Amino acid sequence: MKKGLLGVLSLILVFTLAACGSDNSTNTNGSNASNGGEGEKKTKLRIYAQYSDEDTKGYYDYAVAELAKEMPNVELELEIQAQDDGQKLKSYAATGNLPDIFNAGLDQISVFRKSNNILELDKYVDQFGFKEKMQPSAMNTLYADDNHVYAFPYAGNEFILLYYNKELFEKNKVKVPTTKEELLAAVDAFNAAGITPMSIFAKEKWPNVALYDVFATRYNSKGISALDSGEAKPSDEAYVKAAQDVIDLVKAGMFPKGATNLNYDQAAALFHEGKAAMFINGQWEIEASTKALGDKVGYMYYPAPDSASYEQNKYAFSGGGNPGGFAVSANTPDKDLAAEVASFMALKYAEFKFTQKGSPIVATKVDKEIVKAFDPMMTTLNEDIPKITSTTSFAWGLSNSKFKAAIEDSSQALLSGGYTAEQFVSDLESALK
Image 1: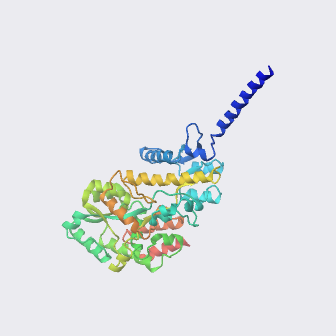
Image 2: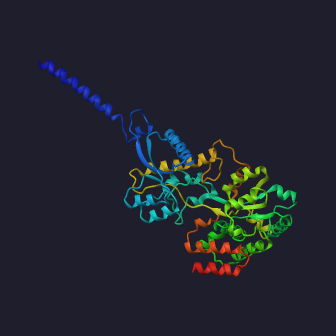
Image 3: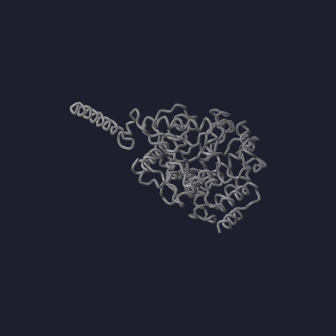
């Protein structure tokens, strides 16, 4: 009996040791987890991102599918981003419940860095080589004003374009202007032909700020952003001259009567129907204008005071962007992994936009084959983006709220025809005080 019991006990011990060895082969936190073997547990990360329509779903689904190939050990738990101007995210921060990864704009970055809720990503930018993957002209979307990185960007800068109807220019034998003198000549020629020289939806205030900024960049490439930051003053010669340029063009009849009462639909109709020779809007207008005018539409580089300054500032564009993208909670348990996933998601969002949405407006370089072909103007813009030497800001991106309100009102007043450059400067300086 003793020999029999010893034999049974020996067998039990052997099976027990074998079972222990089997359990140790699955390491949910170690190197084996990255292999994504069958039966292994995945690391779950909460992510807060847009997923409200077919457009935003496309971005997320594409990035997640790519993530599954590269990091099969990671599982994302999506929480759909609320359309509430960031209020829900701020509530999460206040209660210590921020998702591991979240979509953050400039506003959230500014608030969360002060409350230590957002992870500084500088070391990861170096570790992942993210800076080298950026479009050189989009570095302003990576670094915040304190020269630190708080989010991996995917949306690039957006730009103000001066669209023009090639057919109207050719039929009326008008040269595409490169200087203010040539622009004034074009205005006279189109007015004589009964064609509105340029359409603008000046009922909204930001297009008027953009118009002023277009001319300001011909003298100071930083445009209105230098006024916003305090690097320049409204009384500087560059900004006085830009105001006078707008006034001179208004007096010459460049815009339709009652321009400050025109909304987008009304102003766009003038251009799309061939009743206006030029139109000012962001690059997002490319699709609508191409649909309306086909190969008749193009965009010109901003006219300058003279040929020399035209060439010098040809690729200084009005418009821009702000820091933002996928950020990481400062309290996430695995900061290294969350930062790696956030970086990956940003790159894949940009990749999807570039290859499948037909848009080159991305922060990072993309070297994959295009699925949806660019419109002709998008192709030109894609070629121009690497050449862009500087950007400025849209009105909604200005940080000084008093200055923003003042330049919106003052730039709209420039189109009234009864407002002087001196009044413009005085009103802006009063706001900046």
